[in-house]
Amino acid sequence: MRIGLTYDLKADYLARGLTHEAVAEFDSEETIAALAEALTGAGHEPVRVGNVFALVKALERGERWDLVFNLCEGLWGRSREAQVPALLEAYGIPYTFSDPLVLALTLDKAMAKRIVRDAGLPTPGFFLAATVEEIRALHGALDFPLFVKPVAEGTGKGVTPHSLVHDRAALERQAGRLLEEFRQPVLVENYLPGREVTVGILGTGRKARSLGVLEIHLGEKAEPGLYSYSNKQLYEDRVTYALVADQALAREAETLALAVYQAFGCRDAGRVDLRADQDGRLHFLEINPLAGIHPVHSDLPILCRLLGVRYAELIAGILESACERLGQVPEVVGRVAGA
Picture 1 (cartoon, rainbow, N blue to C red):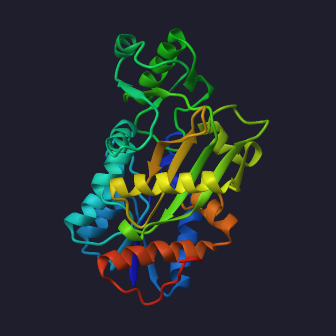
Picture 2: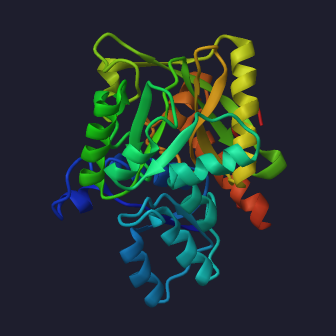
């Protein structure tokens, strides 16, 4: 198959003057090269397209592909992850991963939590505030400690040790900082002090299955108590990742993550982040239906590596899921171990 690759390259946006934090969600050249290599090795023809602006130009030139492997995060707006899939749908071009509705809903953390809550699944109590005045008006709605973060960011952007607040003054101070810096509402939720895990999922609908459960262990050098932006960026010195050995915890995590994934209607692959409360019960934090696939640094490939699943097998599994739901049969497709 001729497979177009859509992605946001960090170097492109850094050259335009954006900060390293602003481009934290975007892909490196290593990711695109590894993806292209995996697809070539499976007998396909990868074609680099690039970001949404490059895609528009390519479509105007009349370029088409059998399938697009979409990694675009987008730059502006809370629906930015939905822009490329919506454009591809307008042109009738099939693509990997979730559709525009799912990508828009899940990037907005408050909307995502409402969907999860409506599905009867556990998630920390929360409220959304667009101004400090709203924070003051809602004071007392939740008990401290609380956790404050931008409502529509990823990769831990805006999450620092100041995000964990223990009193009203700290809440108003941190909310004010985030409102000014990110120009979007803040999500305030009950802080969960327990273990944090992420569940990798492969497939679509009833065929979706857990790949495994990865636990995040913060080391002595880490900012304590939270998987912050800084901890994520410096994970090699601060964070240890391990497969969950506690089978009861793993089953609970997989059951909850799959229920969340299917409630949204996610497709092909994704990742669900969970954290335990003081009683050890897991709650939904966030879902990433467009999970990072850097072969070394991203959580999903890290999980696969610990499971003994090669990167090429992961990519082949994602492609197989997309082709199956689209009714396409790729010329050569691999299979993730255990499928």
